[in-house]
Length: 71
Image (cartoon, rainbow, N blue to C red; front, side, top):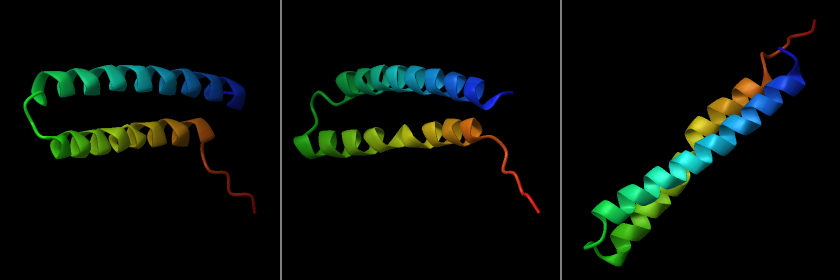
């Protein structure tokens, strides 16, 4: 697959990932954290705010393509 096409597909996937992840994380927070204190909200949003990076890293790694070893 050409690198430009791979980058385009990866970019679209990351945008979709961020939108869906934000909707799911916000929905979970609204349904479950309403009665909890502020520090639980802080921990939840800190954790959920960093968690999306893991699948995004996999997409970026795929976008970069296989490692070429020129000898």
